[in-house]
Image (cartoon, rainbow, N blue to C red; front, top):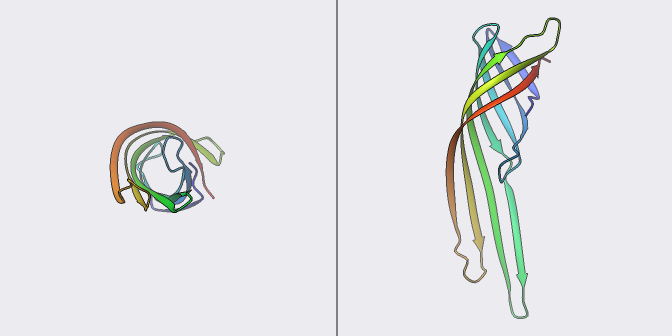
Amino acid sequence: MGQSFEGKAQGFEIGGGPFLATDAILDFGLDVRGAYRINENWRATLALGLFLPQKDELVIGGIFSTSSLTTRYSAFSINGEANYLFPLKGGKITPYALAGLNFITVSVKVEGNAAGVVSGEVAESESGLSFNFGGGCGL
């Protein structure tokens, strides 16, 4: 979602900024993306995203002891996209349609001293397709 900086050189563009994921354990992240402008209407993009780590803590206090459980989440994504641009005459905003291939890896690490809790780490990866509409503006 949105690029906060952008630079251009001979058909190549770089940018990055914050993004928001609406269907993941982790919500916010930062990305860096590079694009190659093939012609006036087509662009190929590669984006690397790093979700901001999240930490949840649960402390259970009893009469004789206290137990704790800490869960840490982290994730990164790689997205390759083809963009079809709709340049507007005299406009600074360029709408576009995109289709892409996505890859994301999420890691969960659990630590604690609660009864029955086994500390450890697990990572899972998933890939998929994306179709979307967006807009960009030069600075």
